[in-house]
Length: 325
Image (tube, rainbow, N blue to C red; front, side, top):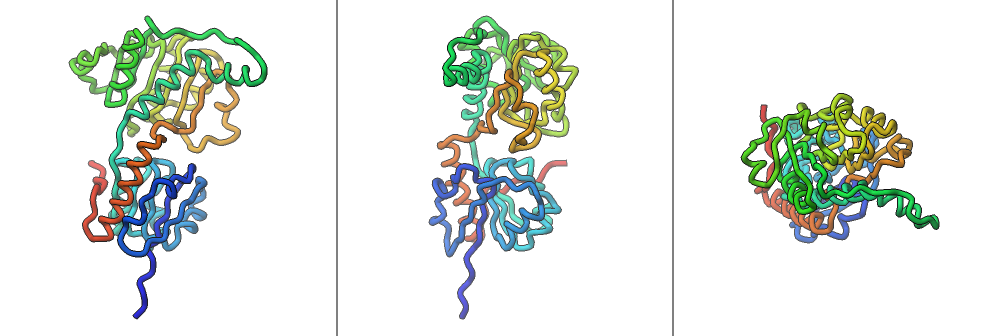
């Protein structure tokens, strides 16, 4: 009697080779073959070739789009696991239609709020510029901006926004916020003043974005909104790139219509080598590190293994819900 073939599991976009470090693959029943793809593959045909005969694919957040055309090229795929409870880059409905189970993991938001403050402080005190200068033999080239007494504006006051607000208050900042359905009582309960949308852009010395990416939030910060901002202001985005009109932002920063942008997220990731943002000395850039911490990776990979093991046993857990509407 022939032995069943090994379950083939492929981890996408494993930039830091984390799958071998954190993955508890030996907890999955049966014979499992694990492969990591350590680079990002944009070409759909090439990606489908790398995933040929894969039974299980693991997606790291929204690094790779998994849509109906790609799924049609993966007839062997039976389980798709994403880090986080949802993933905007996965067409869950298309997967389910093709008999693919989609599972997620838990997560927590403190790493992103912490990185938000790393970017705010780096931009306000010109840390990247001075770091580069001192390594080149220089000393004190810039004049930073203190935060105490300034206004921190939050576009969105969900779980991450509230954590960011608390730190702003600790720094002695005035914190204001707007979102489409913001509850003024909720804002007051965390020491934040709810304001009108235009007032948010006009008053903020630091504007930090914390909206969920959706059809309504794409382009929420565009040329009009950037024109409302102070020429001394700092814009910070650790949410999702498309919430900000990237072309309008490049122009605003390049022309010094705002002072600085500090960005962890972009329209297309990884950021292309010739992208104009890479050339601007008043922009602070990080490569979507908001959730990239050892603690969160450990949680992700523990629960990835649990998801696969539960599916192998015939009782999937943490199934990602179908989109509403």
